[in-house]
Structures are given as C-alpha cells and as structure tokens.
Length: 247
Ligand SMILES: Nc1ncnc2c1ncn2[C@@H]1O[C@H](COP(=O)(O)OP(=O)(O)O)[C@@H](O)[C@H]1O
Ligand SMILES: [Mg+2]
Image (cartoon, rainbow, N blue to C red; front, side, top):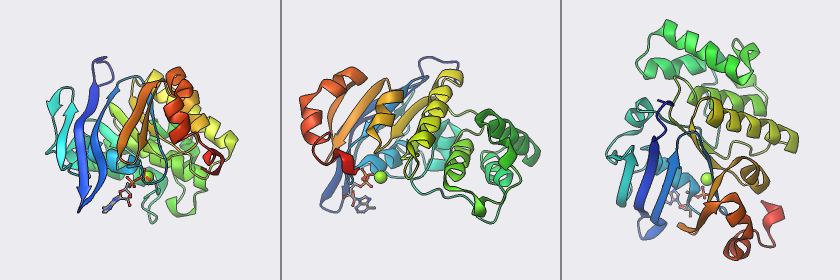
C-alpha cells in the first residue's frame, strides 16, 4: 500500500449535524501517503468528529469521503480499516484482559489473517516501534505512554496506508512527546504512511507536520504548510491566543 505515492484519503464538503448542532460544516481536507498532516483546534472544534468521519465511525450529513478517488462514504469502519485506514482513539481502548501481543493479534484476526500470521505481524510491529519487550505484559497494567505506543502499534498492524492519531501525546511529558514525534515521523518516512495528527500540543504538531489544518467551531479556518500556519494572523487570533498555554 505504501508504495503508491498517489494514495490519498480525503473528505470533501463534509457536514455533520447532531440534531440542530453542526459539529462540522463544509469541511474539505486531504491526507496523502508519506506525509504528516497536523490537525489543531480548540476543544469542541470537531477534530474527533472529523476522524470519526474519515474512518467510517460517523456518517456525515453531507459531503463525500474519498479513498484514492473512490467514494467510500458508505463503508463501515471495519471495511475502511481493511482498505488501509487505521486510527487510534483518544482513550486507549486496549483489551485490559489480554496481553499486549494478543491486543494486536485480535486486530489481525479481525482483518482476516490467521492467528499465527497475526502474532508474527504483532511481533514485527512491536519490534519496529521498539517495544517488543511489552509483548507478554498484560495491557491492564501498562504505564500511560506504553499504552499509547501499543495503541499506535495496533493501528499499524498490516501496514495501513493511513494512520489517524487522536491526541496521542495527551498527558505525556515533553520528552515523551518528542519520542512520539520521532515515531510519527518514522511512520511517514519508513512506512510511507499518510498521517493525520490531532494534537493539543501545538509545538509537537509544528515539529512533525509538513501541512497543518486548523479547525475552529467545525470549520477549517486555515490550511497550509507549517510556515504559513505560524505566520497566519487568523490562526493567531483564533487559536494561538492568550489561552494557548492552557491547552
Ligand atoms: N455524538 C454526538 N452527539 C452530539 N454532539 C456531539 C457528538 N459528538 C460530538 N458532539 C459535539 O460536537 C462538537 C465537536 O466535538 P469533537 O469532535 O469531539 O471535538 P474535538 O475533538 O475537537 O474536541 C462538540 O460540541 C461535541 O459536544
Ligand atoms: Mg477530540
């Protein structure tokens, strides 16, 4: 999957209404392979809703979801995952009763691979991330940052073309967040994964993303390369404002 440079996951003109409230309004966004895209915006801006739309967990009220130009708007989440669109969740969502290897293997089996192939792949991914020593550990007792890494490992099972990360560095120290940034950059470079990184840590986003989308009240208010985002007065006003330190 990663070998095709033209891989693109996109939403076009997407609106999501919950009753009378629009969580997203006419959002258009593209993620291409081998590149990290940042998605920033204040709490309630619609970031998680957008990831839910991109991964088939939320059907939009209007608009299209395109995978390599094909409309996949009616695909349920498990089918999109088979087609290479993987995600993590804001809360870890590991199976607490299973060890780490089995947490990953379950995803492989869900994707249609044999138990054995899934375990082999799980070890390969854990090793690639550098946490092979966690394989036999129960998921329930993991330290926070390890839990995050295992969540990412699970999403990377069988080499997805796209990886959508919903606030993976939440609660991490600066040093841990920097480690995570390296891992994200490696996924894009070595695996040619197209990454969408949602993060409150704006420094982390700007350090690792080549393009950034800024969402505010359900709308994309700015999109561009890192330098354009840093320079944007509109972004400063809307997001890099006085409460930046608080997020
Ligand atoms: N299932 C839902 N039903 C009703 N409102 C929702 C639902 N999911 C999200 N919302 C609302 O949509 C807005 C955007 O939420 P969300 O996408 O979680 O924002 P973010 O991830 O940027 O913090 C919020 O106001 C939230 O309360
Ligand atoms: Mg969210």
